[in-house]
Length: 297
Image (cartoon, rainbow, N blue to C red; front, side):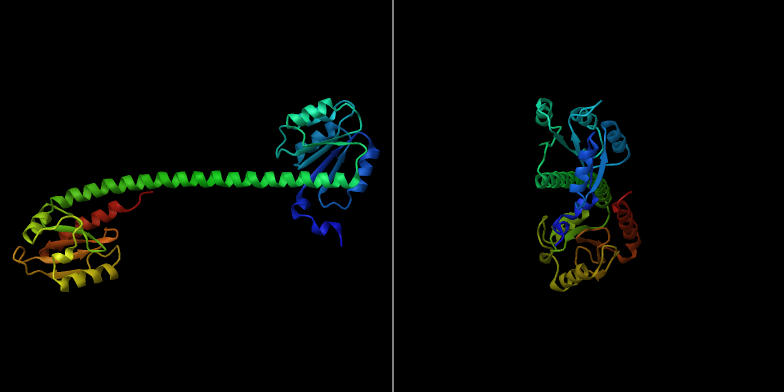
């Protein structure tokens, strides 16, 4: 079975840059790693490697320490601002490891590999380094996604707050108009609980037996009317101007018609007691409320 079949797919998209001033070392590395799936670039100096890094992104840099003009640690220091922050490994056959240990302790170098290296250990180290890069890359991507979701959530919260403030202002304006409306008005929820009444509505409620917010209007109307109101709440939509007109025969409002409207009332309905010929006044008021209640922008 080919060795690469069990290797992770991300290796195929990664690049490893090898830097050594000895062509024989680069030749040995090229022969050893010829079956490895990642792309390999071989150069003989730190300056040549920097030119490569300016033009393309690599995930792993493996450099010799003892090189003319620029040592391995000096070269790696110059790569600290390279996009993608590649993993860095030093190979050296000399005993001058003080600077290497210092670089490792400061976090600039992932690992030190002595010469001569063990072939299988070297291949394993490269794979582990690329795995480390892959995990770091995934963590960075997840962090960025979380930051973006947090930003979107903050925007949504700000928009919600804005809409809530707009709706509160329009609701206060609506209630201000309805409060002085010359006909009784009740707001109810889908459970038929009384939640609000204007001034004339409160007067009517007092005459008809008296309800306070939270009471159920089934205590106020006969079952036949309650059944029709319930059906209206089930079948009508939020855009229904009125879905129910019921002639009233109560001594307090002998000529009134009961109008039930779901327009502009979220999860409930408005109940008006008014002469049928005055419906056009109600339509203007409710249409204004619907326009004010729409999101802006």
